[in-house]
Image: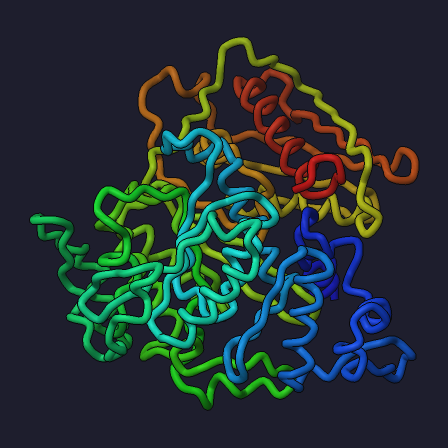
Length: 497
């Protein structure tokens, strides 16, 4: 019973900076403003305006009017092409924004504050470049292989001259070459089975052998074959801040059509590839092993949670410096995100002047309305238990007792984590060497965290070491600061995370 309640309350919500976080689409208002949308709106059994989510024309018109009304974007796609949901796609954009703003992986670009990324398989809808450019002023390369997708992506870009200079549409050819601009329609159609085997890839004149463990994993599952993903798509010397991808989730169109509650369209090339999303993202991982720091953050959306653990394991095998995962929520639909990097992380050093206090406290002010003390208490437990710490919580007294080993403390302090929880995983290998990185040694820290309701919208979080003579008191102070940052990022409006 308690487990079910915990999972329900810990369910992630829409990203706080998402335009629709506090103001979901008002179908009645949109129907009154846009006559073309009105025929698709009706009242459900609860008397609320809605649309038929199984009607492609309805979902396409909703996307069109949302982009126009809320983002000042002119947009359209032909019948049968994948129709994106705007709130869900915005979540992905804002998550990448969080990754780029994080100090964990330092900025490597010399372009100042300018951000440039690549959208793998941008599709006819070109939704990520359009949203990223309009919301944040980012510049994009959008890639695809089919003439229809490239033509309509170009149309959607040119229909928005205020951001068109920020977006380049790039065609991926069967031989791995690329073209853009006026050259888009001069190439031949792509043979999806023309890609060479991925066991060896080359960058310039250097042949790169991928780790044998990755090959072993691939040999037991279906391998991806199809158009180039990143290798052969990036130009020589091209450096990007991120890549993003809405991969083909399914192995067959029959599998893609199993959800009878929605109709978002989608062509076989958008929805399907041999081996599904696991094989496609594995190819992305293979390519990233060669490209390394050419891209600061590699990211992809994931449709099946069961694939996350497999993909994270593959990433550990190839020696990435960081892996992060998250969950995207929109209504009843859940998707997951995975991100990794080869850029050496910025190390968190525990400085000698960190205050060694046995008792710590901070205030959580401006708590978002949907959250209460029990949500904060559960996140405190999740913050530590995700790292393997022993936690015992008492919901009636709002207390969590924590026992955490030295290496688990070090993991927190080295990563500068923003909100450890079951749906926001972060992996970072041990990279900090030398005595200057760590305080005096200890075996285990034991402490208690309490959450108090102060006034509506404000909570007090207190922490106290059980052993006042513990040599780890400085570490406790640093960990408590990390906990404060994580909870404020998650629960407080002013932080926006």
